[in-house]
Length: 548
Image (cartoon, rainbow, N blue to C red; front, side, top):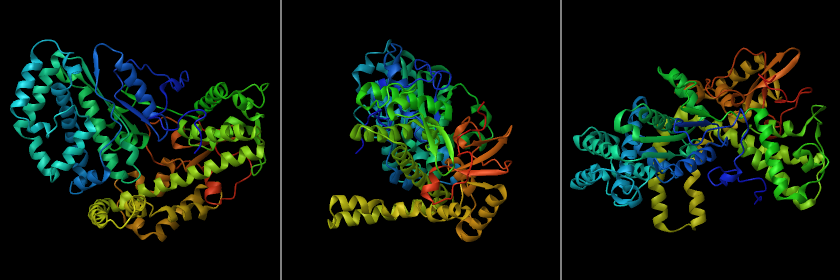
């Protein structure tokens, strides 16, 4: 296991003191209650940034923070509960689930958390407690302070079908319950609810999780636009850039969320990521000074490695080491920290580093990253085709899993591996076709005509793909590769080639591959992952579209 020399790649556990601010790029007012949604790609620091907002709210006298919630409900239960929902109504139904779960969580703290009750003035709290205790059914049996995700888990477990929940939601009991909570909050501090990590299951059921995440997004804004007592409830969540794109471009009201100050983007461009890389290297050298191989070098990375430039042998091109590292990742803090830890580990062990070893470490990590992202792309395509079948599989798999468990024929380790196999096999169903699509093109730089021919061939060879009716733009091979950072566009500007990937620019754009360029590129990691022939000349990602 690699030691965390420059930090923990997972933002849910990283020490908050390791936060890196990059002026004019990654710079936020953590005391503000205006932001309601944090948007970024996987590994962009959404969880870590939200934890900074949580930490700031704990220090404000006019706020009460519900315990930070980053343990989402069980995906199998979500799938089974949602299986019979009409796809067109799924987001709307889940909005009601989220709203009710938030109110129920607040109510359990009103009743059972003394530190919260002490923050009230007036007599409305006592009135609310008396009313709720007269009819405890809306509490779903909870008798202790309970977080939102746990309430959602209870909803999907206790209600036999979603229609049963809707009947309850539309009943006077439910409306009286939420109105009572609202009245009690008139005398309370602002109640802050922070929800995270819902997108961790995105790969297993993308279509469903996108709809559920959109529902939570809309609920955040419902509370943000509320008046009266409802304004005492502040809800903030994190969402992926892809989910944000579908909200903006698949909704008739999408424009209201575009360039909205209540939506905070984490725009990790290559330049910002390079600055982050140098800052993390500098912090690592302070902690591990023995890894400083060249104290005289002008940059922290140069001091760490012993050189400032690296020759790209396949491209016959010399480039700065920070750009070389960054373009072999997906421009996210998580990937930079993970790669940086590997580099520090090698130097710490050997007390030396040369160009060949540096290239090997970077290229191997980039290959592993590309292979992981190919599986994510496969899951998106599978989700667009087999959405209903995934829910059916989960239901059958759960029943069979309980049968195997009852027979006690497998060790705990073997049972754990067995449990995830059917779902993994389904979501990985397009891995080989995607790899074949990439290998069919064969090089990391290619023309628009070659891309179109490859798309036609992919459609001809995959019957399910040809016959499917995509529920969103990510059901197209070119769009899902673009949205996942595997496929980019190459432009020529003032005699220089510049590359654009989906995550290089603003996050408020559609996840649709631009069709105006004459040339396209695959990300560097695919060269090793799929055995591509690297083209000569400027490396992919060396200059990016929009860079001055």
